[in-house]
Image (cartoon, rainbow, N blue to C red; front, top):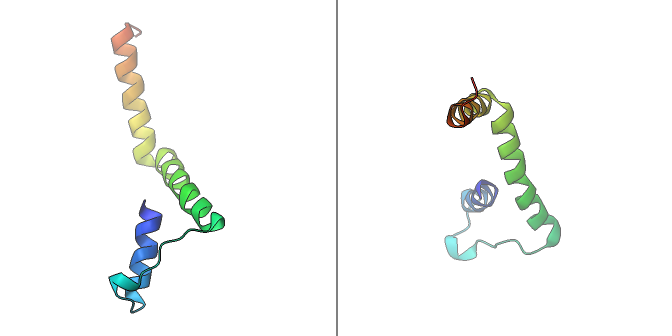
Amino acid sequence: MNYLIALHQQQIASGLTPEQVKFMTSLPELRDASIAGVFDVFNFMTGPSGRELIKKVGTCFCEAVGIH
C-alpha cells in the first residue's frame, strides 16, 4: 500500500491534480507494487524492531505452553 501511496504522491508533486492521477494497470507495475510490501515486511522483521517482536512472541508462546 505504501508503494501505491508513494506513486500517487509523486504524481501530485509533479504538478498533476488528483483528477489527472493515473493508477497503474500494467502487470510489471502491479508486480512491483505487490513485491514492495513483501520487502517492507522483510526489512522490518530483520531489523531491530522485528527481532524484538519475534523474541516477545517466542516468550509469550513458551509461557503459554509451559516451556521454561
